[in-house]
Structures are given as structure tokens and as C-alpha cells.
Image 1 (cartoon, helix red, strand yellow):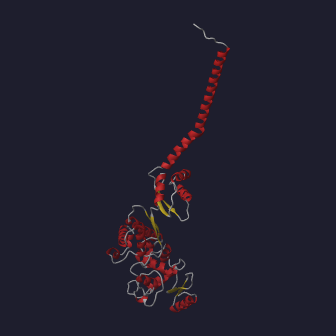
Image 2 (cartoon, rainbow, N blue to C red):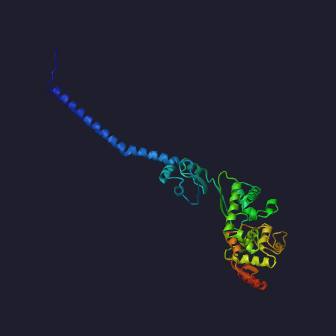
Image 3 (spheres, one colour):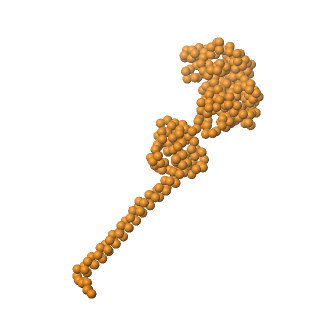
Length: 370
């Protein structure tokens, strides 16, 4: 048997191999440590960020509803900030990231119904679909028919459906039903003026009955604020008649500064048994909301024509503002029986006698008021 030599050459090779193994071991450990460092510095924070993003974007379904209005000229950033302010999203950065990843919608002007802490997917879907809430603005001086037309355009219900809903709301409101005349419920009278002014919104799936109830409730609240229901008797009229006076004050006074004196003229003429002779009632009888009243117009056969019939018209002729309601309950002191617009700004002059009225009409003509 031969024995292998174990000279210097083989000994050197074994030594070199052991050195390389130690070096590779050191390098491998170093790489592992570096890799672990990378995980700590990059991977773990990234995982945390991804989990945070998923959690925030998933939201928390079941939050309370929030109505958000988008105005003309607002950018996507503006809308995101509004959503954050109202609690629809809990983090603007996450929402911006979501829009980058999924696309930014062409956001339309209007009103949207969201929910607190809503999932981002639903928010984006709703913004993509456009406004899901309709709204109308009831202005002082509007008539029942004007409001009905606007509701038809927004909600699709007919005038008759709106009228039925409004009458039902009046009959079920504990205050409104006590002041409304029976003619409203028998169909002899229109529920004119029985609506509060302001903005109303249509929530998805909401019935016209809900909207009508809100309108009547707001009117009742406005009347109670000025003491109309409580104090109308002190003026010698019923609450419903006070509402009618307020509608006349609204159309004839127009501006707040004129209204208390216009209310006083109405009361003074009623006290003296004089016809009110108000152009606004003639326009209402003609189905118009503006324009000059001619001599032939004054002969229109209608219970609303106060040139032909003494006393108040059978119903209000429009929806009064809070200013008109207040002026009705707090008329100015004076003996005036006449008034006329004498300036382009809408200022009215008041007179005790017809001769003074003629002089004021001459001033109006000189100022270019026809």
C-alpha cells in the first residue's frame, strides 16, 4: 500500500481552502446582516405603509351621512380637502394616492351624499357618477306654482303630487293644521304661501312627503320666531290672515326698509274699510310675477283682485321672507294710506292723503319710474 505524501504543497492548499471558507463565511454573514438591515429600513416600513393604506382606503362602512357641495371652479384637491374636513376620508395623502392609482374623475358641480369614513372605492364611484342629491332654493316671493315647477324639474313629481304632499304635510303638522282654513283641504283654495324659504335637498330615495313636511315645518318655525301665531290676534287678524298680509308686504315692499310701512298701510286701509288696491294681487290673479299693470288689468275678475274686492285676498299670494313676516307683526307707526316707488333703488314714498300720493307719483315719473 502506498502512502500519499503530505508535503508542503498539500498543506498549503488545505490552509488556503480553510481561509476561503472563513472569508466566505464572514462575507455571507455580512450579507445577511446587510439584508436584514435592508428589511428593517425598507421592507418593514413598506409593509407597514401598505397595511396603513389598505386600512385607511377600506374605510369603516356604517358612518353617518354627510352632504358635500362641489362648487364651480373647484379642483380635485379642493374636493379631497372638503371630504377630509367633513370626515368622509380620514387621510388626504392616502386619498391622493388612491386617485393616482385608480384615476381622478371629472368631478361635476352639485351636491353629493357620502358617509363618514367611507371606503375610497365608493367615494370614487360616487364622484364618477355625478351628483346624487337634488336641491331647490325657495326664494321670498315665489309662488306655489313656481316651486312646483322647480321640484318637477329636479325630482320628477307632478304639480298634483306635490300639492297632495303639501296638503298632507299641513294636515299632519300640529301647528299648521290649526291655522289653515278648511278650504285648503276641500280643494277650494290653493296651499299658497305655506312653505318656508331657503334651500331644500332631495336625498336618494327620499319621498316628496318628506320634503313637503320639511317645507311646512320651516314655515311654522319662521312664523313662531316672529310671534305671528301667538300675537296675530292683537292686530285684529288670524294667523292665516297675518301670513296673507306678509305675502302682500313681500311683493309690495320688496326691500326690508319699505316693509314695516307697507304693512302699516295695509292695516290702515283694512281698518277704514278701504279696498287695498294692490297691483301685486292683480298680477297674481293674472298669473304673472312682474310687469306693469294696465287699466284693463285692473278689471280682471278674480277674488284676488283687490281693486274690485275689499279685504284680504282668499290666500297668500306668495311665500314671505322672514323680513316680511317680522314687518307684518311689527308694522311702523303712521297714518299712511298710499305708497309708491320713487327711486331706481326701490325706495318707496308714503302718503296720508291722495293729493300727497299724486305728488309722490310725480316725483316717481321725474325719476324715470313708470
